[in-house]
Image 1 (cartoon, rainbow, N blue to C red):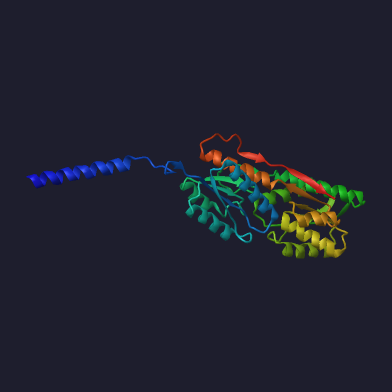
Image 2 (image 1 turned 90 degrees about the vertical axis):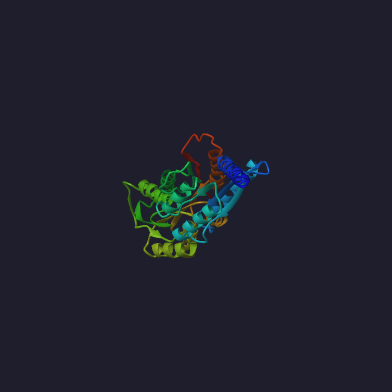
Length: 308
């Protein structure tokens, strides 16, 4: 009888302990201190100075906030499979939020669904995917592309050139930001006597873009538009080698692009504000994680026309 009583009391004790453990709420605190938010930046690649500046902005905000464990992940080149791997690594690494510049609008959808299931907040910087997010911080790319076209058109008229062929060097046919830039650029030439040739894609690689631009120059174009940093550098270098008669207008700001403008091989570039994207994107992510209201779903981070 005594043994049965002891066993019964032990059993009840274990049951109450188990119930107590199960009912105890989860906490992210360690030794009474609240754990930092884990935020990952995942860009299209690590090649462009543009992404380095996004990283700098995010890092600055993380430092000011003081409660963020921040990491920048990105493939070495623009590649959907490699960007998917980066997102999956962020999920496995315990991310609470991801700042993402999507290489393509649909390629990363499956990975973003997994991130959503894990409770991860998504904030888009520069280029969104076709998947819901807390906020998108980007240039109004269509408007900026139209401005680029208008700058080229103005320069052509100043040279008394009223017709001719114009080439476009871009990244790929799916990246949201560059597709919109091309659309805006083409719109600037609507109703004119200029012919905009079929867009050629260099994957944002300066060397490939230079070859494409050189082929356009051989075709006798009067102008070339570069849709991103690598495309613009390649375009400027091709014009430089050909003697500088073609008018080149590009996108993004880097030391190389500014030197090409200074030397007169490029007319202008549409300079975005990638530091603002990273800085404000980080703040938005942390506000979302802390349950604070996000006023806007889309934020135009602005653009400036830089010339010699």
